[in-house]
Amino acid sequence: MESVTPLLPNDVLVVEDDAIIALDFEDTLLGFGVKTVRTAGNVARALQLIDERAPDFALLDVGLAGGKSFVVAERLHAMQIPFVFITGYSGEIGLPPALKGTPMLPKPCTSDLLLAALRQRARRG
Image 1 (tube, one colour):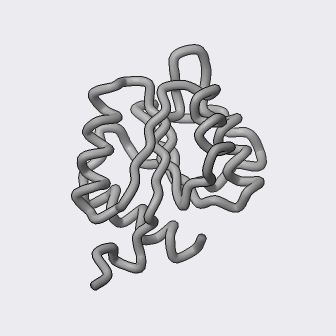
Image 2 (tube, helix red, strand yellow):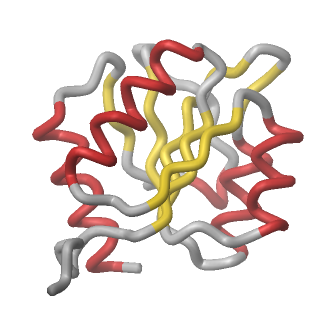
């Protein structure tokens, strides 16, 4: 019996520097039926996790302590791994040209919005 909906990724990387928010995302994703959720609180750790095993999908907080997650996004983009940004910023965040058009979710993000993003990106990816 298949426990994961085919439209959901099995392995999701969450890049979020606030541990409580990261845990909330992890709980929500696991509740959707995602098998594995790995979290990174900074760019270096996120890149290390990607090198260890490429995720099926990633959720990237734009603003991390010490910088933005654009380097991680560019790596995922080059590997053709679907991802979305999540941000509490309003207005222009200065996305690099290669990342223009990447979906943005608001922070805080509802479960329904997160699930819809997972399904939409999984279909495209």
